[in-house]
Structures are given as C-alpha cells and as structure tokens.
Length: 114
Image (cartoon, rainbow, N blue to C red; front, side):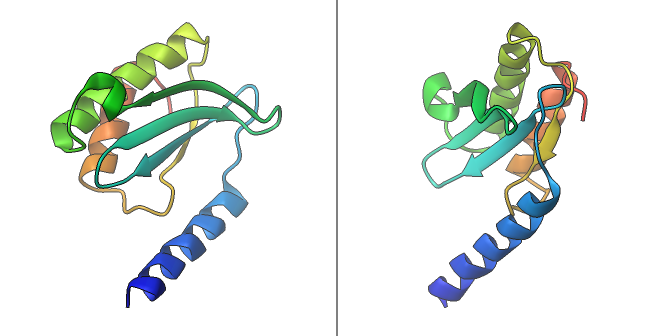
C-alpha cells in the first residue's frame, strides 16, 4: 500500500516535470512537503542553479497552514531580492489545496506572478 502510494506520487511528479521547466526569465518555484517541514526553491533549470530557497525550519514555524503562509511571503521576498518577479509553479505532485494553496496564495500576495 505505502509503496504504491509513493510510486504513484513519483509518477505524478515525473508527469508534471515533463511539462514544467524553469528558464532564466521565468524560473520554477518548486515545493517539497514533509511531515517536519515545507521547503521551497526558485530554480533556473537552464543554468541548473537555485536562485532562492526557504523552509519552515528557517522560519522556526510548523509545516501547517500558518507556516505555509509565512513561507510564501518569505520566498516572495527572497525571489524579489534575486530580481525574480515571474515564476512557474511546480506543485511537485501534491494536490493544489491546503498548505500548497496557502503557500502559493501568500507568494502571489508577496508580489510573485504565476
């Protein structure tokens, strides 16, 4: 059961990554969610470089809705400092609801366009 669940998630991830790619003009905002933290990176896939990164551990917040909102605001600020205004959102095979949606909405409110 658990193995199938993980395999299904990785299959969804591969399917999404086949379509979503970051460039210098429009890098990829990717999200990783675990039980202990949420991590976000702004990645330029063409140059294979991380432009900005943040996590709930850095904020000393729990990986819940409030932590996701704070993380979205922080990554928007860090991306703006790296001169990034538009991104492609990579939800990384997670459903666009709950923490992932709260993070995305907070990043949009912080000034990122996607």
